[in-house]
Image (cartoon, rainbow, N blue to C red; front, side, top):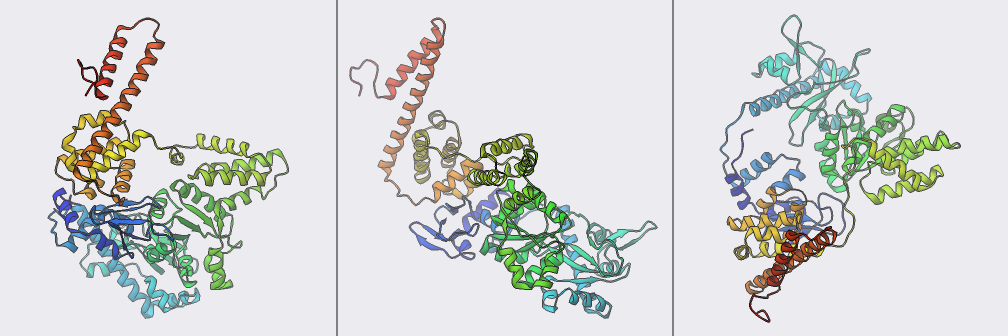
Amino acid sequence: MGRIPDSVVDEIRERVDIVDLISRYIALKPAGRNHKGLCPFHSEKTPSFNVSRDRQIFHCFGCGVGGNAFGFLIRHDNLTFPEAVRMLARECGVEIAEEETEERDRTARLAKANEAAQRLYRRALASPEGAAARAYLAGRGLDAACIERFGVGFAADRWDAVARALTAEGFSPEIGERAGLLAVRASGGYYDRLRARVTFPIHDVHGRVLGFGGRATKPGQEPKYLNTPETALFHKREALYGLPLALEASRREDRLVVVEGYFDLVALHRAGIETGVATCGTALTPDHGKALRRRVREVVLLFDGDPAGERAVAAALEVLLPHGLRVRAASLPAGDDPDTFLAREGEAALRALVDGSSAALEVMIARAVSSGISTPWEKADAVAQVAPLLALVQDPVERAELVRRLALVVEVEARHVELSVRSAARGGSSDALPNPVPSLRRVAPEDRAARTVAGLLLGRPELAGRVCEAELAVAIPEGAWRELVLALHRSAAAGQEALVSGLADRLAGEARELLLALAIADEPELEAQAAERALDETLAHLRRRGLAREAKELTQRLRLSPKIDAELLAAKQRQLEQKKLALGFRPGTATGR
C-alpha cells in the first residue's frame, strides 16, 4: 500500500475534532477542560475515560489506553493506521494522493472474487439444487433468519460452478486460485475446491469476505469440514469467524466466548449469546491472543466435553495468559459440543453454562488433582502439571492467590508451589514469560521534578527558549521522563507545540503513556512569570541533586582508592566549585548573591 505523506497525516490530524469523533461511539460529558465518559475498552461503572479537545487526545486512567483520533479508530474498529487515516480523510475532505501498488490491487481483487463466490453460494442454497442442504440446515436448527444473518450458502455438487461464475464476472482463473476458490487440475485447467458443502463466509471487521468454511452434506464425504486455504487475504492464524457480529456485544460485556466450529457459533447466537467467535480450522494462536486482548479483558472457552476439548483448554491457556487475558472455561458434558447441548438442554441452559463458567486455571487445578494426591509423587505430579500455566499469569496478585489455592488443594506449603512456578518460568522460553509488572514504589524526587518540567513545557512551550536540550539531558536522569522532556523540548523548538496528538505517534512505551496521562490531566495553567520561576527552580533542584549524587560517588571512589589519586581529587574540587555555583555563590564574594 502506498505511503501516506506525513504532511497529509498532520493536515487530517488538525482538521479532526476528537471529541466529535469519540462522541459517535460513547456518551461524553464536559468535565473541566476535558470530556469524560465510560471507557469503551474495559468494563467500568465510574467514568475514567478522558478526552481533551485542546490536546486532541484521549486517555483512560482505568486501563491506561490512550492516543489520538487515529489511535482510537485503530483500537476501537480494529483498523490499521493507513485505514484509519483514509477513513478520517474522507470525513474531513482531505485528498490522499498515493500510488496504488500492485499488492493492494491484488488483495482487492481477491476480496471481490470471494464476494462473487458468496453470491453464487447464496443463490445455490435458495435454488432447487440446494433443497437437500436446506433440509440439512433445518435439521441443525437453522431457520431462514439465522441463515440470512450468517450468510450461509451452498457449494453445488459440481466441479466448475465457481469457475464458471468467476469467468462470467470477469475474473481470471488465476485470481480464483489465489483466492482459494479454485484448484489446479493435474491434467490442466481448474476445478472448484468446495463442492456439495454448506458454506460459511468468514468476514473481517470491514465486511470483506476473507474465505469460506465448508461442511460436508453427503454421507461419507471427507473431510467433514474443509476451509479455503491460506491466501494473501485469509490468514487462519488470526481470523475469527463471527467477529463482526460480536463487536457491539463484546464492547458492552468486555467478554468474548470462543468455540471451535461454525455450528457451535451459530448455536451461541441461537441461545442469545452474541459475544461468540470461532477459530477457522486451527487451534488458538498468539495472533488470536493479540486480537482478543485488543478487544476484551475476559475470554470464555467453550470447547467439546471430551479429552480433546480438555487438551484444547490447556493449549489455549498457554496462548492467552501471556496476553493478560482473564480466561474462563465452560465445562460441557462428556460427548457434547455447544450445538448438541443446545439441542438437548435448550437456550437457557446454554446461557447458564457460559455465564456460570469457572476460571480456567481453577478448572485445570481440579483436573490435576482428580487422579489422586495420596502420595508425594502424585502431589508433585499435580503441581508440575499446573505450575507452567501459573507462570504465565501476569498479575502478581492473581498469580499469588492461585499458588495459594493450588497449595491448599494439594495439601503442601505454598512456598514449595511458588518454587515450582518460578522453576517453570525459568525453564520456559522468553516468549512464554509474562511481562514484568512494575512493583508499587514511592515516586522518586527526580521523577516528580521531571514531571514538573514536562508539564511546564507542555503547557507553555515558549519556556523551551530558557533552557537548551543539552542542559535538560544532564539535569534529568536517564529514563522515560527524560525521553518525554527532550521530545517536548524538540517539538516546541520546531514550532509543533500544538500537535500533542502528533507527538504521541512519535513516542512509544512508557514515555508515550506518561505524555498521554500528563496531557489529559486537568491541571491549572501557571501565569507566564510563575511558570518561568517554577522552571528555573525545578531545574536548579535537579542540578543540586545531580551534583550531590556525583559528590557521593566521588567520595566513595576516594575512600576506596588505595592511594591518593590526583585525578579524583581534581574532580572532587571541580565538583565542589560547581556545587557552590549551583547554590548561588560567585568566586571573589563572601556571601554569594
